[in-house]
Image (cartoon, rainbow, N blue to C red):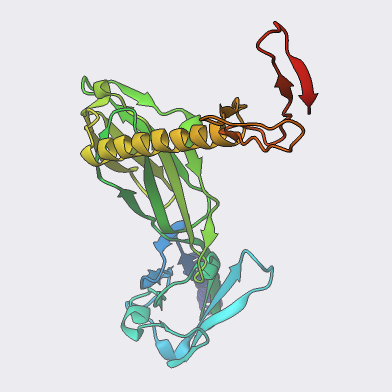
Length: 352
């Protein structure tokens, strides 16, 4: 009886030990399963802005992997781009188990960065048409993760003001030109302000400003110019006109100034001599016109030079009397001849 009882107690203890061991293993298995790390990809949550024709990099950080360095032989990385002009993605770069395959000229990745968990993509000379949504897909067998980042390409404007110094006579007109070149995107703000000698700032009236139509360059950027017409008085001497340019690519406004130097009108000797000569010529011309008018069109009475000397006339014989008539105008003339007897008071009409 004693042996049987001892044997039975031994079997009970063994069964309890196996039950505890089973639950302990199950608990450890569940804990390990719950604590198993999952691959994650982290990219910029804010839109990234880059300047045209610069070399850029787009980070793609991986985390939650078990080793200190990733085994690139067990990795696949693919970079995609979806631009604003299309809904379809295109592949930029693939990295498969150490093999590099660029689909975009000037794109590359570094294995040293990949091993440290940064699947960063490098792009040289970024262009305006590469604005869009970039997607980084990372596979570390057997896990897979991806992330996206928005990228915008802009071009900072180049601004010039001509002339940068102005010397002008009072009440004369001058045009100032503020030129803006090679900017993108198209939206741009140009304004003019006037700063007086006592530092009073006023916005220039729009009626004095002319903004020309923008011109698109071959690389997709734009050019535009704004012209300001000024007609200063002597009181405007020393005033400053400022061109102010604002654009999305700028953190601060671009400010360009030009200072006015206003002088009193100068006596131009050449202009004075020219005026005198013109006056003399005009007087001569008027005199000539008056002379020709008088000579040609004004009526003038005739001058008669009668026959002088003694003239003997014989009874019943023909006699010729000569008279000179001159200096008359117009040409048609009527000539009447009369005879006056010494003994008579009146005259007798002879001939017309």
